[in-house]
Length: 78
Image 1 (cartoon, rainbow, N blue to C red):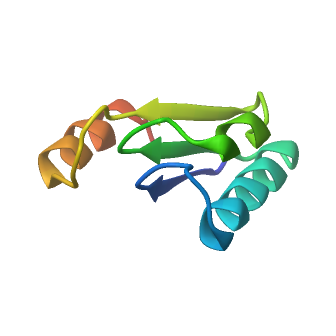
Image 2: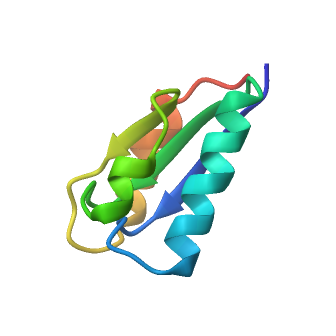
């Protein structure tokens, strides 16, 4: 099975965030293992994320590639 992750700062709002949520929800509904990787898991669009989409909250205030490296180790291929 394919898998995909979307990296977004947070879900506070805007067209890009809404588009990512819709895309993630659609992919999860189609059977693709889908994750939203968020610097902070907060914002109004969090309520629109489908149950089949994994939420990975890095709990960080700013982007740090060290967090992404550890995440890649967590998400197995396929």
